[in-house]
Image (cartoon, rainbow, N blue to C red):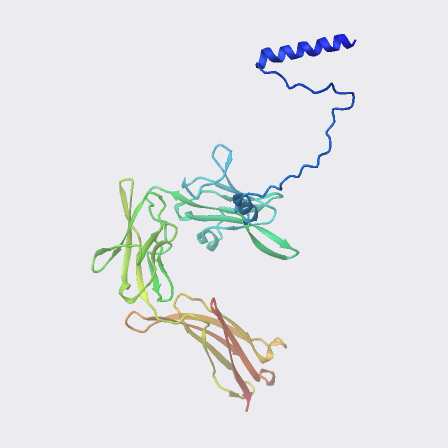
Length: 375
């Protein structure tokens, strides 16, 4: 048996020499049964230190992951590009992964509660569908996942998606406007936008002054063009006032936008400057009480009013009317006057006391008060 074993080993050695041209390493002595085991070693191994690139990638914050997909005409799904061009009339089908998803889309669709738009939350994704699309739907569509702890949810910035969609429609180079004339307020504290957005990505857009008639250069330092916003005045000043319009050219056709009246305003930004005034601070039983709360501010900044009044706990019937209007003060300066009036008819003793008005805008709130007593 040992002879046959040795003969077999010799044949294997010869075969290896013919195939590889190399001689296999020789063992110092034949292995005994059970000897082919890994023996322990005391050799010290130098710990591997990760390269700087590896350490940076491990320590860096996770990249944003797009959760949005678009269903194509062929029924397939693909990640949408940063900008898309679709033909008006097409159905838009966007989906975002997650069981808690929020959406943002052109305000035009939200303002009019358009029945063409629907958003449905499924078990593993949310679906936005827009049918019978038009050029007016051009804009940014975005979604993001939410991280919720009980009833408190916050936006997950690492899982979101967005795309800006141009809905091209014959004869509509500009995104249609609901009016034929619009006002743009120029405030020295912030940018102003002439919203000439187009429906064709390749369109060339220029800005023009009506009088004196001339093209307004967009030099990149004072005025720039943003296809998602329009012409942006980076540092508005009084010289920019006047009537302007935009002109778009694409595929051998041209179109003129609506006209925009640029008005310069000088109202300092901040919480509302609020004044309160009662029709009379001394009343008798049966009189009517009228308290007026007034705010002077920026023409395009909305103000919200809240009231606290003496008969509130007793559910005393009152009438509250909020209104606003613009005041032109000459030299192109315009101010918005917002006011709220609370009226109590047929006053009783429970109507005497403090009338408190709180006016709020995006910069903060201001609270003022006055008293009404019985004589």
